Amino acid sequence: MQVYLSWLLVLLFLTLFIGFHPPSAFAQEAPAPSAIDTGDTAWMLAASALVLLMTPGLALFYGGMVRTKNVLGTIMQSFIMICLISVQWVLWGYTLSFGPDVGGLIGSLAWLGLNGVGLEPNPDYAATIPHQAFMIFQAMFAIITPALITGAVAERMKFSTFLVFSLLWATFVYNPMAHWVWAVGGWMRNMGALDFAGGTVVHISSGVSALAAALYMGKRIGYGKEPMPPHNLSMTVLGAGILWFGWFGFNAGSAVASGALATSAFVVTNTAAAAAALTWMFVEWSHRGKPTVLGAVSGAVAGLVAITPASGFVGPISALLIGIGGGFVCYFGAVILKNKLGYDDSLDAFGVHGLGGTFGALATGIFASKAINAAGADGLLYGNAKQLLIQAISVVATWVFAFVMTMILLKILDATMGLRVTKEKEITGLDMSEHGESGYNL
Image 1 (spheres, rainbow, N blue to C red):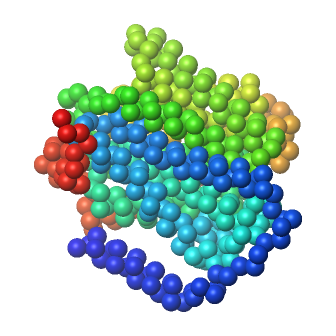
Image 2 (cartoon, one colour):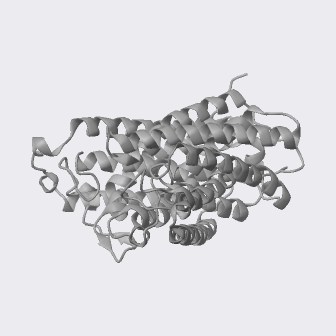
Image 3 (cartoon, helix red, strand yellow):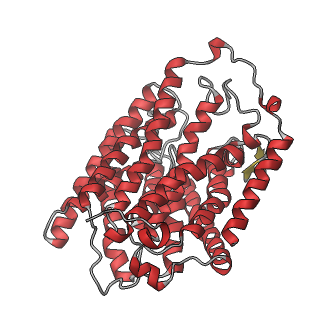
């Protein structure tokens, strides 16, 4: 009943919104032909499609790592984010993230329902592409970020509560974070924090929130007492490949133009991913005696996470070092730390995204160079120790904000809707108990 009431309120909001904003309010004048660069626009639309593909890639990556009885439920948690957050972004998410600044903390409601977000460029964010092209590119980041959290609570969260949690988390955690770091007037941006493509906004925020969710919800039934191996590693490898492919849009697209900076970001993204995959494989080989496929693909994702904040500020050799460091750090977090402390981060969302994003953000403060991007800053290695301090402040602020806000949301939803499926439903599996379907008819 509570779920139906929640969605009824959403529909009521939409009705009132449309009533107060007739179609004429959204009419835009035709953009001046000379204001838009067709090459930049084509690249940004392609990059948007690449980033969108990452969410189905994540669905396969996560889906292969759960047990057979939960594969559809896990895939659904990623896929439905494309639908839910796309609507939220158009209605209020974009204006809260990138709308006119309010105190450095949040965007105003001036662009509610994309009012005023038309086909002419907005020079504050992208002078050579339509404002809507920038908007839809940023929408893809907003979509995948809450989906990343599902890796920590896989196989045990109620789907109804998950939907409401994701909507609230996007509104009260992601949207403010995006404004702080990327929006004109955001306090982290004003401080000089560097985050080219989402180390803090996407990876630390989701990874730390994932840790909060794993700690609050507790372990899966049988965790640590019975085997829970991935049911389909071939699916996971396919998902990792799609993620790697889409990540070029994620990082190179953040140049918001098709030029030298996008090229540099593309090169360092590939370099870091490859270095991290090799590092994880060799560390695991030494630690456990065998080089696993799961380890190699996990390492690649770790490298992609680590290079994300630095991708527009470092060169290939720095990317190589960041990839190696990311492989070490994430192996430690996903394998050694998790096993030592005993928390059930089911698919290593915190170990890879939380710790990888943290390492990448700090590494940006070490390796960043204005020779790569004049609009950035030099890091510690280039004589600017202050940049590392700025990066550390942004990391700590992101950790605290994401963890506390997520805990608050979880407590409210646990008290009102309940977070976890019943013991019987968890044993049956979420595919049948939550969706009435089976991933395989064997």
